[in-house]
Image (tube, rainbow, N blue to C red):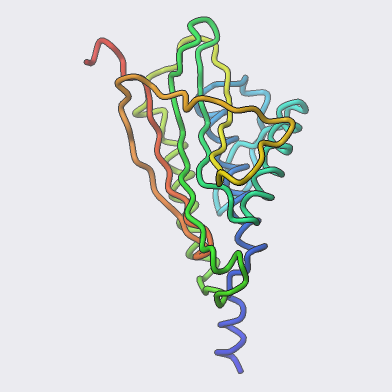
Length: 208
C-alpha cells in the first residue's frame, strides 16, 4: 500500500505540470527584472519560493501585465502549443536589444493528448532543478554587463503554427542580438514539460 501511495503521489498530471511551469515563469521573470535593475527596487518584495528568498513584483501595473501574460502561457502549455518564451531587454534611448533570456520548452504530446501514461518524478527533485536556475539568475549580475541606461522589456512567445495570435498579442521579429555572447543556464523537467534556459547579451565592446 505504501509503495502504491508513493507512486501516485509522484505522478505528474498535465495540469500539475502546467501550474509548475507557470509558477516558474512568474518567479524567474520577476527575478530577472529585479536582478537586472529593469525596474526600481521598490517595485519588488521578498517572498519564499523553492526554499529560497526571491524577489516578486508588487507594482500593480506590472503585476497585471505579468498575470495576463502568464494566463496565456498557461493556456498554451496545457494545449502543448508553447515552444519558447523570450524576455527581451532593450535600451529605451538606443532601441538596441541588450539581452535575450530564452526558455525553450519541450512537451510530451502524448500526455497532452491523453494517450500516454502519466510520468513520475518526485516534487523535491523538480524543486531542486528550479532552485538551481533561480540561483543562476540571482548570480547573473556577476557575469552580465551592467545595464547603464534605462531599459524596457518585451515578452515573445513561440507557439505551434496552427495557433492563432490572441487579440492582445502581435507578431514580432526574433529581436536577435548581433554578435551576442551566450551563457547556457540549467534546465528543469516535470517529465511533461522540459524547460532549458539561456541568456544572450551584447558583449562590452571594450572586451571584444
